[in-house]
Image 1 (tube, helix red, strand yellow):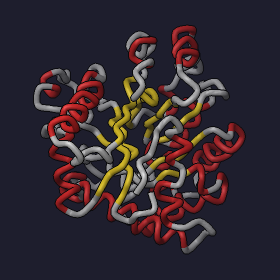
Image 2 (cartoon, helix red, strand yellow):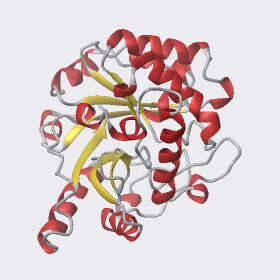
Image 3 (cartoon, helix red, strand yellow):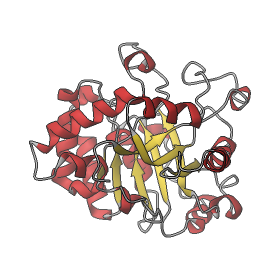
Length: 304
């Protein structure tokens, strides 16, 4: 974890062309190209990057997380077929947060680290007071193991607050994209500050990168990072993520896959971490992946 060429990807999506036959007609973004694990690893290797941990996160357009479980099998096949080449890679997965889908069998898989709630641009008023606190949801939270977490994606900080307050306090929570994708509201936005306050009160909430969905300009996203560190500490921030294959577009209509590839995304988070480290006592590496052993406590990280 101390090697600059060794990294984690706390948020990436792997899926095949076959997986993409499943989405329905209503999609929040254009249908992406297939993004298999083997191609992603080859892309990183060509730039000298050596991932030690990958988190295959539920892709919102897919009806289930079959692709996550398929990626576990794919890595196992690669490790058998190419002795030594992929031995350094640890692969975990975050599956769809649905009380019926996330059953004991799926959550019991040793590589499943959590479940993901996906709300995209849902406004706060769309989150009913009991949307995530009904009996089926409470039963889902009870099924989570101590090392597993609920991963929440909402573009609005206020929406994130409403969801967070419905999740039982003992459940570990990871918030996507630094808790907000609304850079125009600023890091002093009341809802963002309320989100930080709620996270601080719980003590078991982490904010995850990469941060380019908050804003693709490092200077503009930096205040959000420093707010998180000031309020919660560097151990509650996990910047290192690619969110490959970079689906969707920014508020100006620029496609993220025109702005980033996996290598470019890791360069972005490195520049962001370097800038943030100048504003706090934490090092860039601590901001990038220092929290990884806490967020993923069941992972045996290989020695570098």
